[in-house]
Length: 260
Image 1: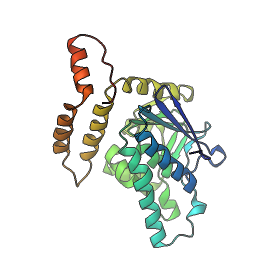
Image 2: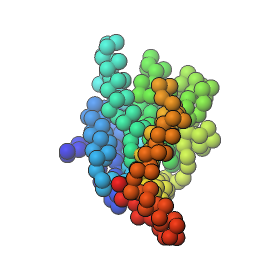
Image 3: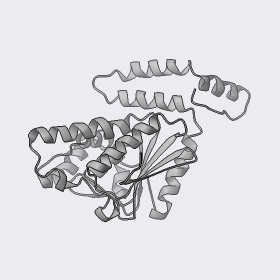
Image 4: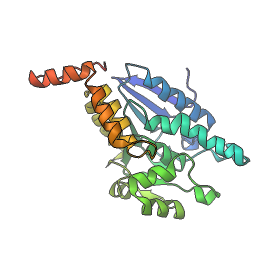
């Protein structure tokens, strides 16, 4: 697929996805969401992809929100479908990605932009980043998982406060409340993300995919997180990566994982 709104590049087994609408502060529109859905789905079946990095073009914004002009006239059913499609094809797909996903937050991450970052497994922010969920100023609430993921990451009280007030917080505050893992300078943002991803991609890919499923199950009311952990732990024993990892450990050498 040829992307019009994304820059997609595979380098050293890391898939770089850059939302490329800097003139619109990388706002999410239908085309961006459709292309994100395709890029994430394709990465799941591409053996050359070991990890994914999502960021925004330019230095002002990761994603400054959704493109309001596209849904301003929607009715009740259209609004529900808008949220459902986003959940199913983009935000939940990222959260459940078998390949680890890091968000490199370069500037504003507001509304759907913060929801996109929260769907990723790890978040790194530049020190000029501002994060928030301002939907109530539009007569809306977050519709792409923001009410759930913000409460999971930062706690119920802070989720209420940020959503009720629509206030933005600084990158430093976001780190204090557990919303981002690291805060670095804008010039060091991608380097820090790559540092983590280069470490992660040396680990066993199937074990990482199992870890994603087990961790996410703990936040799914329909799942038993502990049972999922037991099942995924057992599944690891049936992989070549387990045999390679344990053999390499006993032989005091570095393991070479193949994802099999």
